[in-house]
Length: 116
Length: 116
Image (cartoon, rainbow over all chains, first blue to last red; front, side):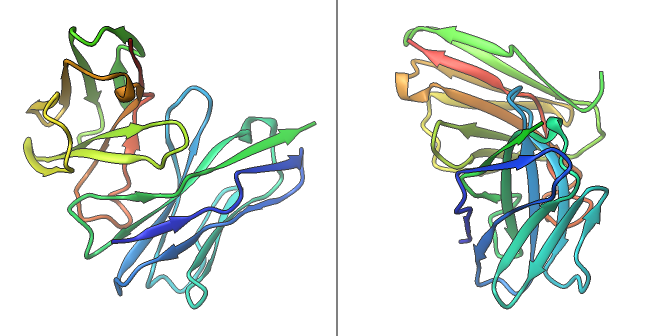
């Protein structure tokens, strides 16, 4: 089994500033993947970014980047130049080769609020 | 329609009612999922279908009955539910179930279910 820990229930950031959302994971799998999803108040989970355990470079997608530190088992999401529309719940999730077919393990999420 | 759609968006039902949740994906994916999201709990995987065959039933009570008539449609039939079943029910789809880049799960907006 895998476990995802998100220690920040809520984070606040001013518009245009960068923010880091923490995620640590616990897995015995050698091969695994890490995902970040955004959930606005409307409810839909929006895929943001993916990092494979064997990827040597940190993943980036536009304003999103993943600070992957394998030895520390952390996969923090960095959002640069925050926008008001970034206010949402953010979930970190993992998938391992030993996981039950198709199963993603989610953390409890971090509520991000961007203020003007 | 694009992406993953779910109907209804909101549902209120009594414990003796029978209702169904519908999910449709327009992404050409082969795998579909049902998740339950309760307040203050991580997302819980309920069922996984791959090529219309159920490949995972994550110890879900029998009052929840999934149906996948084809790779684009997924239903969750509900009967004699309990108040603790009130939650957001999310449907997702992916190309395959092996995880990793290219098999990200794409979610619908969810059905907010209230059981009285």
